[in-house]
Image 1: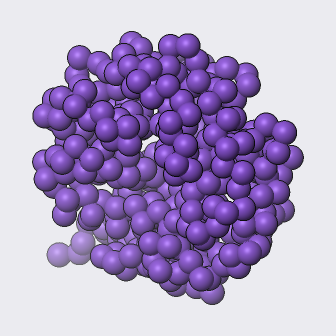
Image 2: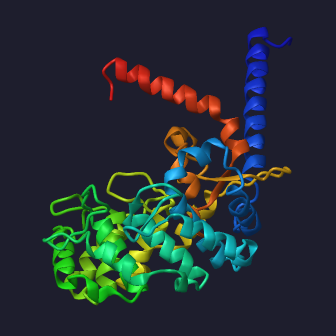
Image 3: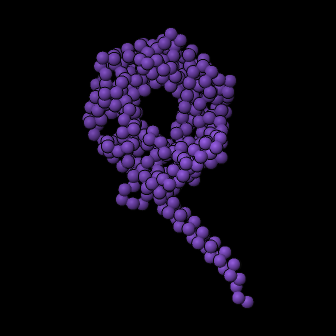
Length: 362
């Protein structure tokens, strides 16, 4: 019998679609590279070369937080035993060029206003190179002490924003400088405890929603001050271990997607309260490595994302300049090649979202 023309057309159409799917899949797999181990050398190469691209879009939009970016990047190099890959004297000179001798604080870059966040990053970088001797520790301590408020909280700078992040930052900086006695530690602890919630977590302020990032800051500050007895370890540990999603990753709050950055915030908090055995560490490691994308080309330029490669429909959320600076052994990379490969998907996704918003769907 002669084959049905309609059947032949359907089979041909299916073959074309399957062929296109296979081609697309092979291109994505090629861009993703081999998973299962950390591409350490490529991460080192990315960090070392990132500072040289001062005219790039990423560099310009992140100019204000370069000191913190330097800390994350240099810490990654240190963890990978590659800190010698940078010129220590050059780094120290640049860090000190961000210093404001009149106030005692550091800005996020040369010429930027001082803030406790970048002051901590500067001190941490100098600790990495064992160069705290270049600092006026008392002047920095006085700067931070002047930002403690009557209720024990800390402002981030002279403009007065209050957040438990700044409590941790201030306490951590003073501890590194051996000047913790300069603040009212008792009041600082009382304020942090006042931010504790019924679920065992902590928020940015009293009554604020529990958030994994804030929890790390509060738990870290309480650990430094010897005040962990204020924490219900089982209750908080349960809240933190519930952040592990089915794919093995950790999220920052209930009903959120897993995000590689919380591999640091949640894991660190669990370790401090001795409840890290409550999560599946193997699944978490697999999730982190699933977020690593390397290209088999001469560029091999790694960018940092926060979601696994399988979640391509969330690319518009990943395409954030800040993401590029999150580099530790838990913050894995994605190549520019892959981002450019899916730029059209990003724009289409943004366009679709905007259309739905205009139609009243949120």
